[in-house]
Length: 231
Image: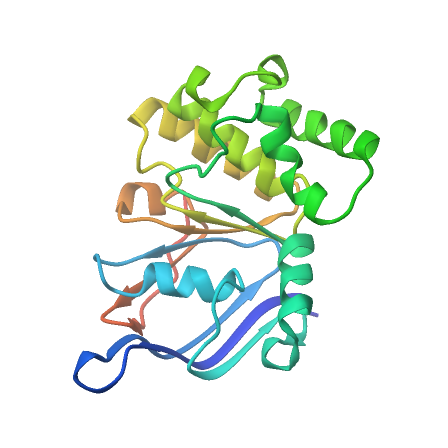
């Protein structure tokens, strides 16, 4: 039996009204299974970030249906959506979005703080997450003391600290040199092999080739085409 993580039916997102209306996504149908590694590609303005925001429960669709972990999201309250996002979804941003005045350990603890975990448990789990991404020696360092690759690893540690069902990664290698970018892709592969689904937004077809399946968006429409499988 297929373990379905996401199911979108006729998913659409519109911004603005009247002559200023922009149809960012139009009639998208897709399924994502637990444990998949998917790349979403397409030109700028194609709807990739909009789709990521919907999958991350950061925004709501204008039309259509979106299910996550067998729950119809339109039936959930704002608090229920926030709780589900905190517990089951990790988000990695291209710009890292780390708190500059906080240590790596504190940055990784943030989802646990929002989840109401006790201080001792927070420290233990954040340390374990940083060790998992190879940064156990950078616990007390602030973002300005870290390289770009290290900052992205802290962001990934923060995303996995609640042991989510899926990591949504928005251009995770976009601000990095090729060698560091390959290290981040290798880390995402390792997390995927341990059972975490990965949905990765990328402009790069080379980066997308690292995924098991590729989806292409053009002008808000999901393009039909063959499944792309990494060799």
